[in-house]
Image (tube, rainbow, N blue to C red; front, top):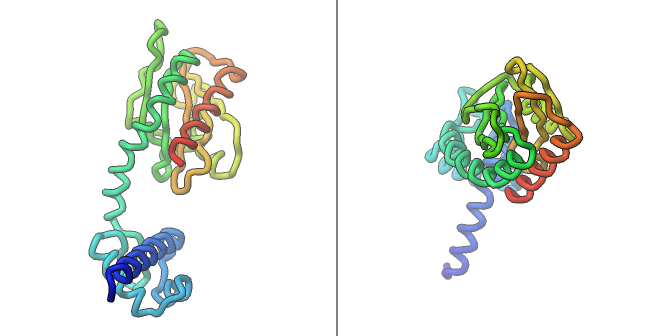
Amino acid sequence: MTEPDRVAETAQTLDRGLRLLRLVAETPDGLTVTAAAARLGVGRAVVYRLVGALVAHGLVRRDDAGRLRLGVGLLSLARRVQPLLADAALPQLRRLAERVGATAHLTVADGAEAVALAVVEPSWTAFHVAYRTGSRHPIERGAAGQAILAGRRGETGWTVSAGQLQPGAYGVAAPVAGIEGLEASVGVVALAELDPSEAGPAVVAAAETLARVLR
């Protein structure tokens, strides 16, 4: 086999492995080897080889019934992605915080909770909300979580909440849309009521800009 042939074969194997990983991720009830072979258009022996490599790296596991499921190795990869996501969001959050005069944040979904992944406080206000990175709350409460849920439904625009997470706190947020695998929102929170006609378009613009950066 020539060198170009070996390179092409390696690229094809990598492509099939990634496609298989995506199929497993899209099948929460578990994927059979037979179904995977049919979806990929290859023989079962090829799938078994791909599964062996993915299992060795902890990216896929086989349950008691032999179905393929995502492995815990993906959690390690996800933890490494989060700082990169936060770094990408910080310039947008800084501009948003200074423009609105409120604490800006990037919030991501984590199961039934919403988690603040990055937070930026405005530099010119006398008082503002001290919102800690890593703060969690039920995803159905607060503007940030509600925006994530709205994004799941394909809705655009902004959400507003008042006092749902902290008495006297007022939030406005918008979903970060169009990034496969990412459920997130960009928002602001303040100690006094924000003008939605100003804060709303600002968080939508910040969310859209971040989405373009991540693409």
